[in-house]
Image 1 (tube, rainbow, N blue to C red):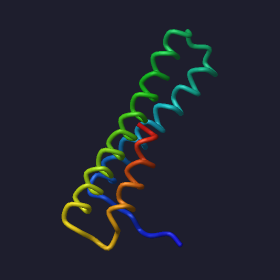
Image 2: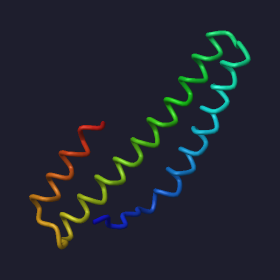
Image 3: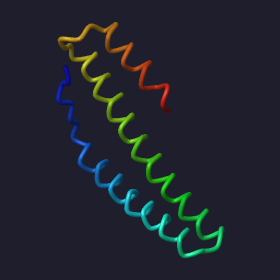
Length: 92
């Protein structure tokens, strides 16, 4: 069973990921064009950084949401909120 789980920051994160996807496509084209390794490495670094930033934003948003939920009370138990926090923190 999948629950819809959308935070306010998700649209912005999705924009970043789509931009990174476009950059990655361009890097793949650059390989086909025989571009220099330095150019390729720089562009791959930019893609990697964009994805990393999207992940960081997602995790920080989730943690903020979980902590807010824990502080203000919710259907979830504190134990469940802490378990969620521990699980997602593995991806930092």
